[in-house]
Image: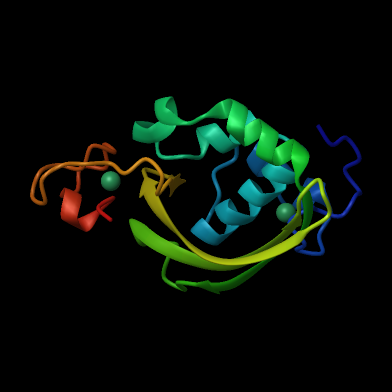
Length: 158
Ligand SMILES: [Zn+2]
Ligand SMILES: [Zn+2]
């Protein structure tokens, strides 16, 4: 757990941790999916597995492999995050995507750079990451299992 509030935030936003991802890590809702994305990256850097679980779609949380997340967090050397694209209307949307590049190195030193596009769903005032490894299933017109009250096809369907 990071303790120096004047340290730069691991998400690379050029802000102090205390003004950037820390309030989110302490429970404040992320105002946009992009902010949630950044705070999840910081959580990986800092080993905040509880936060990573809590910000995954509630319907998926019981399926997450905490040990694997912890290992991934600990054994990677995190080299940076760049959010490349965010839907500007995402503040009001129920479902959105964020494109980003994440760079990291494995324990053996090999470096990776990965362009990804993640999906996020808003339930009430909170954004959640939709984990593509644990697809939520339902029929197209049924209420989405995530609990949003929307139809599945308009919500967490992949
Ligand atoms: Zn941050
Ligand atoms: Zn949903």
